[in-house]
Image (cartoon, rainbow, N blue to C red; front, side):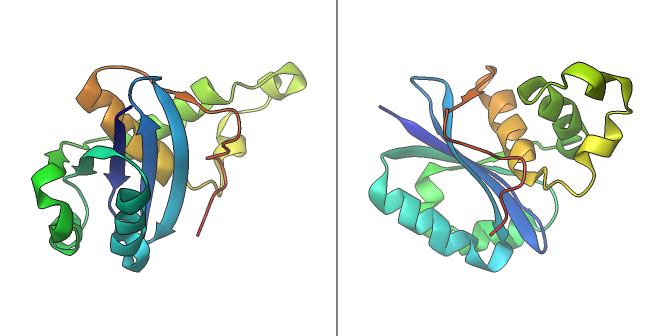
Length: 145
């Protein structure tokens, strides 16, 4: 079973997803403080069979890549243009509005949401050219560390 990590790097926070590639499922999705990124990835790498790590080439990616030196052989730098904007659309694919909520402008439902994990998911989906679904016990809408 191969596992992949995808990272949407940022100056203050990073989105990260861990997926089971064989099952096409997201096992973990987090938004964490950038300073904790290397330790978090190192812990995942110790407990999971991580085959590759994708990281977006956007904001502060260079600094984050340097901090992930310990996985340089498995690190792939990926284009992440417009992933934050696309994360809003992907949010509603994963969490569709139902009932009376469909009458209210969608933007209200994503205000104050941390979409960085969804941006990381989009980076991975673009790289793998496939869509992933969420594991039953995951809630990437509001996860913040």
